Length: 101
Image (cartoon, rainbow, N blue to C red; front, side):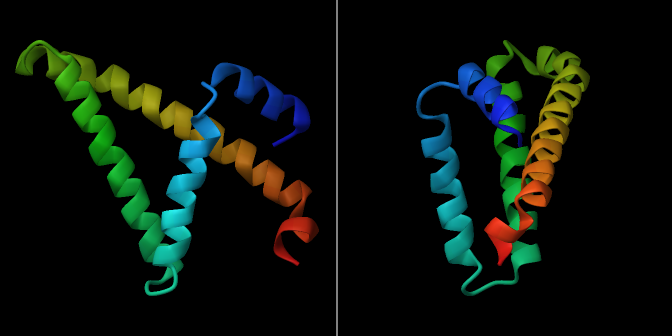
């Protein structure tokens, strides 16, 4: 993630966004002490999907509305994930030696 991208992301996020993010990463890192990194990653993705499905369903007035909102919600969440993943991949590639050596 470039400095400009980080600044833009920080402006869009509330003040505790990165605090919460770091808390999730801390739990994931702790889990890698006992589980394979790929399995921890799969669990995190599933947890995010499960939680986001709950958000969509619980914000609808009924089952039919939740079903109508499904396609738009999936598009939103997958676009958000894609953008965040690309930004973080760019950051890790750009700073590979700093982060991984």
